[in-house]
Length: 145
Image 1 (cartoon, helix red, strand yellow):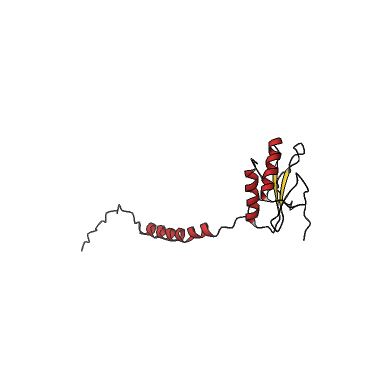
Image 2: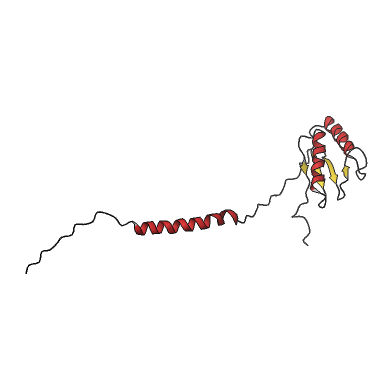
């Protein structure tokens, strides 16, 4: 008996089921890892050393705030006597009228309330200070504990 050979035509279609499976797995992986990347990133902020005021500039006007919230000015009287808010504004305004380029600094105690230091900066702004610098302790020069 003679068998007839049946020739199969080559199939011109590509089987895409494995590709769909891979794409679905990748989609699930990205959906799970995307929120983790946005929420759990730990960042180390850079440390920068501030440059000291150049010696050619005039002596800065300093407003100090102690731990109890008292204000002390290094101009117009005893620097160890507390002054009230009106006196701060008057004295600073007088100094800035005579020497408008005088640097203005705030020296706040570590334990003072943040709002008190902000209030001191507002007083300096009311007196006409164009900019205010904050005095900090140099962490590199401090003794190790």
